[in-house]
Length: 341
Image (cartoon, rainbow, N blue to C red; front, side, top):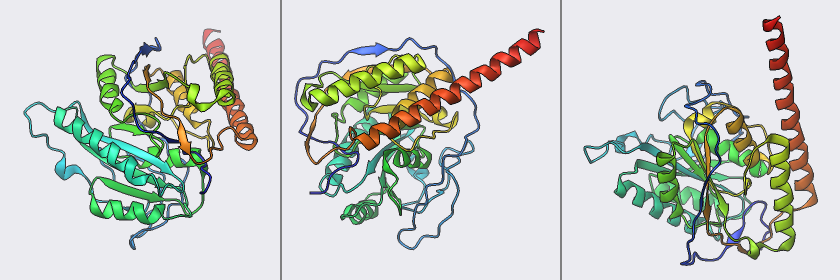
């Protein structure tokens, strides 16, 4: 079986659910800049004979913008947006997207779990509609074929294909820029958490007026001693370098409002992108809230997230962001001194 670049394949959800809500204490903000800065070009290739439109995924304030990449099932979901009840749902459209590389064994399970969770949110009036977005990162198995078939059979499913493998960071940047929702969640295809947690995350976002809801793993003993040590060191470094207090900054559960992603540009191409999202959100004054979820460790495949190559790239991107933010702070300080003088 092919090794996984960023998928962790996990067991079935179990019944024990002891959750702990942990607001970060960051100040609430209504937004950052309203103008969307483009992400890096994604070089997505056409499917089903569609013409490539290019571009960088700008939204320009439109709720459901036209695609900037060649995707399957490209039609707008606006026709199904009108809520059936007199009370308008808090969120119009939820996007759940999955970065996938050689996930033929897990794609149907991931889509099924996400679909079930989203339908529950629609029925409860939390969202008006949803989309399931697959980012196929140049898979060499049948993932692309299965994704296209899923999109052809379900109007909620869309697919973006990378002609070249771009790893986790590139896939997440594509996913965030291609998402049409005013609420966006990404997850690994192997489902490291129970998708039912999504309903709780939406409630947390409303009740605590959060801009980002980030989950952390309640019990990490199943992933092994070495990875636990790596993670502890990494979270400590993020806290020290960026003054961001996160218990599990790289966990694949981050629910974001669209305005957060419109406020800045993500630059990382590697695994540091999870931390970069939280750090930039924090620096722009957005409110981030954490809560605990049950974690299901991988049972198949080989993860390369702790490989030396991945770690070196992560550290390079981490210190690159540190240098960028320090340069901005120094510029602001010099400007303040000029104004005061």
